[in-house]
Length: 228
Image (cartoon, rainbow, N blue to C red):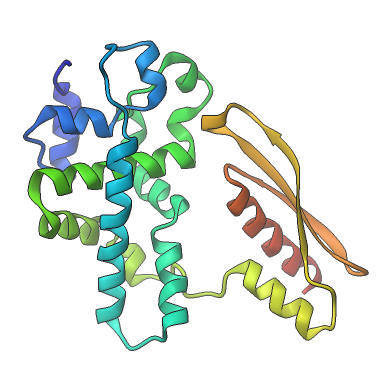
């Protein structure tokens, strides 16, 4: 396996990842599609993403627990928003991750470097790599630094649109909202989902996003803006 490129190493160091063992960082930056265009033994990021997801969740949960006395429901609401793929992808873009992901040509041509799913997964894989190399405390410190604006901001404080729509329907004596996937396009690593939400005898709204869950959230938000 080749080592990190000078650009990739400089970028990792710039953002506090402190690479020492090239192999673990190359693994974190490698999408499965790369194996069709790179070294045959190139491991992809999935195992590190699994680990990083847990390190991120525990770190954010600990921060939220110490930050105040919010009840469990509010803590869960904020935790889910702060560790979501959408938030991870947003942070990944803010530090310039897309240009450093190792993708196969077809995946890159299909927009994989700007996929929320891929960016979120690689962000978690980098956290996993940091944990493997330097331990939990260092990985947690990295998370708190990269997530600082998100933790101190309003992410997850507002009621989730799907919950708000459910309560709106119940409060107005309407049937529960129904979500339907009306279209799915693109390859698996850069899929686009269109979801319609409808409330009987009221109306419907539609939204498209890179995941079914995000499309449902945006559809619920659009419905409330139109009918709420």
